Structure formats: structure tokens, C-alpha cells
Amino acid sequence: MPKPNELNRRQMLGASAAVAATPAFTSASLAQEPQLSGKVILITGASSGFGYVGALYYARRGAKVIATMRGLPRREATQLLEEAKKEALDIQVAEIDVTSDASVESGVKEALKLGGGRIDVLVNNAGIGITGPVEVQDMAATQLIFDTNVFGCHRMVRAVLPVMRDQKAGQIFQISSQLGRVIVPAGGHYSATKFALEAMGEQLAYELVPHNIDVTIIQPGGYPTRVWVNRNALTAALKERSDADRIDAYPAFTAGMGREDGSGRTADPLDVPRAIAEIIALPPGKRPLRRAVHPGNKPQEAINKVSAEVQVAWLGGTPLGPLVKAVHD
Image (cartoon, rainbow, N blue to C red; front, top):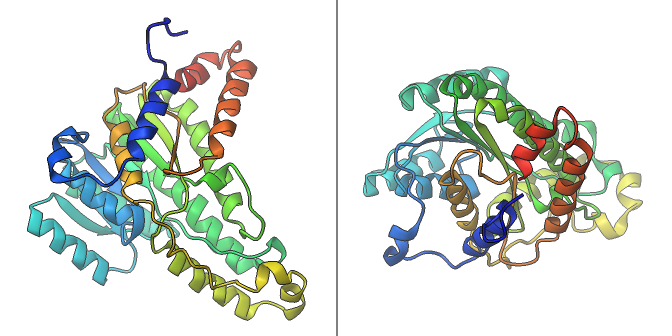
């Protein structure tokens, strides 16, 4: 238990979350941002969204960044490298398709070469969404979203952990969602995949305590990224090939499939890489298991609190107690 005049981890999280919700930084505030010099950060899904802006943000903070994406060569990779060159940032691009065992294996090997034999941080960012009622989700859509959002993260974790264990240090960030704790109707299997990612991340956190490797699950709310464009394309294709009787059975939920509009969201996507950088800068063993990130409502925080209390109450007095307490204290 912390002493009365000491900050505990939960208080630290509250303070950090407030920082994460602040407006975009200016050049005058750069010196106050976390410094990441010497860190080698590997990011998946860096062609857009949190991955793209994160690659630039971490590099501006001094990190060596290996930004990965599928389908190279592609315009987004060229653009990212051009931006890096203008600012003399240490960003390299490598190809990883997280749905392919071979691509993950070869991509991580390439990342190790580019990173000088180290990977200090893995940001498991690659992910997709496909909306609509559960019954409408055919097996092609179901397999694709689980292969990307769950199995893809698992492939990456298995590929980097031998390196991190040899280093006796490392950090893994699982980009989940507030929908990894709460559920909305017609969200397809998105919540199912993020719930799975949450469970995988928490179990990993316990198991990796002896190896000095920290795991943090990032839970963003809604942000104006290309996730909406990609989600609409995949959802529209699902609707097009679906049986009419299944579509017609849920008119309130299927009418807008493939036509979601995320343009009205004004939260700054940099909130997510800022939060990640703040956590990287914390001492090993003092990093939070979960961080909700959004300037607005964060309904998952109440669930996070109760979940941690239940885990400690249930396992705290068992032989597994030291591992669980190390993660939640």
C-alpha cells in the first residue's frame, strides 16, 4: 500500500490522462514532452491514423522508429519518409502484414536489422473494423477481423518477445478501444476482438513481470482517423454479399452499413501517441496496465477499476499474487 503522502499508480494515471487530453502541442512546449532518445520503437499499421502520427511523434521525441505497413511500396510510406527527411527524423519503413506468419517473421527480422539489433517498444496498432449485426457477419468478415485485430497482435508478440527477453527489458502496447470494455449494438465483431485483446494483454502483463517487460493496453475513444473510411469499405462489401433476409431482419442497424460518418469528431489523434510516450518514459514496473485516452467520456474507466480490484482480491493471496500485484499496484 502507498504511504498517505505518496502518489499511487491510479493517481498517476489520472494526472497523465489529463495531460493526454490537452490540445495539440506547440513548438514552445516541445521541451516538456517525454524524451525517447535511445528507444527503438516498432509500430504496426503505420500507414495512417495513430500509427502514422505516432511514428512522427516518437521520432520527434528522439526515438528510432520502425514504421511498418503492408503492401509496400505505397504512397503513405513515401510520404512518411519524406516528412522524416525534412525534419531529419530517424524513421525507417518495413513491410509487415500482421495477418501473415511469414510477413511478420521477415518484417521483425528486418526491423531488428534497422534497429541495430534491438526492439525496445512494440506498438500493436494495426486493426480494422467491420460493422453490422452479429448475424450479418459472415465467416469471411469474422475471420478477417479476428486475424487482424487478435491473431495479428499475437503474431507480433510472439515474434518480438524472444528479443525482449534476451534484452531483459521491453514494452508492449496493445491498441484496444473503449469498445474493448463496453459494447454497442451493430458493432460487428469489433468489441469481441478488442475484448480478446484486453484479455491477452492482461495475461501477458502478469506472465512478463519476471522478464522486466511491461504491457499497457491503450483504450482510445472515437477519433477522426481513416479507420472510418476503411471500416466503411469493408462493411459495404459485407452488406453487398449478405443475404437479403439477414439484412432485412435488422433494418435499424443495417440501413446505414458502410455509410458511417466520423468527420464530426474533433479529438486530436495525437492524444494516443502522447499517452504512449508518457508511459514509455515512466520507470519499468511503474507503467499502467490500462490507459483510457479521449478528452470526452471514458466509460471504460469504471470497469478498469473494478476489474483490477477483483483480480487482486481473487489472486492476491495465492502464489500468483506477486505477479498480479506487481501489475496493479
